[in-house]
Image: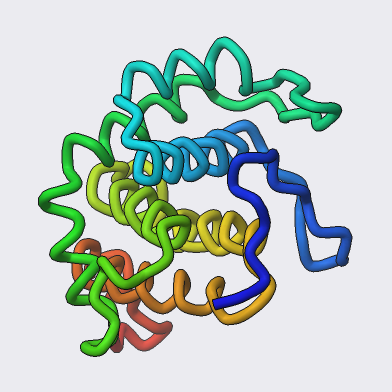
Length: 177
């Protein structure tokens, strides 16, 4: 997998017409993925990472790069939720991946994206599944130029259909499913 941006720097919004500006929750999702990556790679504890991001990253300038304002509570909920539910989330994500690609073999940044998206699909019933999937595809696009956003779409879509099947059982005009 190639085309990966540096997850330790603020991800830049792509300049094409297909991208849309991130809202505060979108920025919180992006920052949460970066924080989860940092925790996975460096082994930093949740409290330290949350403190670092809230004090020095969210809405701040770092090395000439400006972080956008984020929904700080949303950021904290995603991080705490992924940490609390990781033992439950990982097997779900693993089953949504192709047989020859176990979760442990997936790039750390992609794992962070899938875990955050999986957490929201599992616990944030107040947000439609299609919105969650779309938001995490955008997060993947902020870091990857190749096939990774498609992988995120496929895995989160499979999880959404399993975890939230009623949202996808939409009837047509004739009452047919």
